[in-house]
Image 1 (cartoon, rainbow, N blue to C red):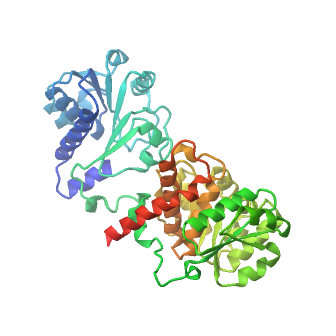
Image 2 (cartoon, rainbow, N blue to C red):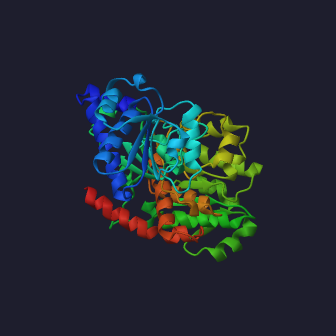
Image 3 (cartoon, one colour):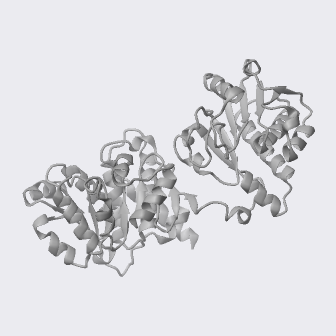
Length: 478
């Protein structure tokens, strides 16, 4: 928040005004959720602590029983934080564990999003004691103390908040795990920082959502036909047949005009008996299928097998310039020879690894966002680094964090469906980055609507409701 505050101040908004606005926003969020109770506001020496002084003053003015504690001597305070402290009539006590005893609500205003070191001393002890109490409501200002606002990592001990109130916009740490879990409910408050004032502060980053790609979603034409909606190929294997079938159904539900599963000759009866609207073809015809320009998008990996043939077929598809989605075995088979894979990319490509597949393919370090960006740049492909906090990154530096995936998606086959969703959008001509973003968000949205008990087969068949809502939204945006 420091850089955002500084930008707003430079644009003409006094820092103390921002601090007062932030304090009011936190108090409003607290009062909407909780009745007055014994409250401790714990402040640090910086801007976050300044917000805390405003919060303590306003809660006390509203009749809340409040005690106010400061981690450092008052003489350390400077600038707006010192002014906020001077405006607060409450006695300022040192932070102690004894002070926490008997309190029902803790407002954590110790450290904000810019923290880059583990908590130490009394700050650490206070957070540990607070986390140990299930009966204590914990409210964080900006981010829970101990959490990196840039990476979502806990820097040692971090507060496990029930409510976090941040300002201006979400930070990566609010969206990436474990930060998203540590924040609890997240409220983003407008405190008077204009978008223009902070537009250039961070790399291009956003939370994934329809506003980013809705206008680019494919729209069938009344005078169109199925061949104009793309013909997608899904390369399957002989043994794990369910993976390719799930992906194919996902691509078809997403709107691809035709979908063909290309599998070993001996497996054709298995696939044909389980798929109706999806066509089947033999891998013996693979080269001729690639040569047909009407087959414009291809997925390989789910159930393909970690074998030399999978590597050969993947490279052939990439060199043919098809829009390609690579998942599972098509990634693992290139462990230790990533440059061979990347060098074959000629057209749009989306790689959808989970953490294990990612580390086998990429030798990059850093937080999840940084690693996904580095991988996209290195490979020349869009990367979907999957998880409860999937990061989608483009070679041009754009990146989004997908934060709508519920825990219910941790079920066999859900990743295969996601790959199929991406394929279906690529087949219809959607740009690779936007296709990956849209597919990931819709995957999560369908899962949210289904809730507990979902299985992978449910995801494609419940996609139409989400597509219908998105189509309505797109019309409203025009």
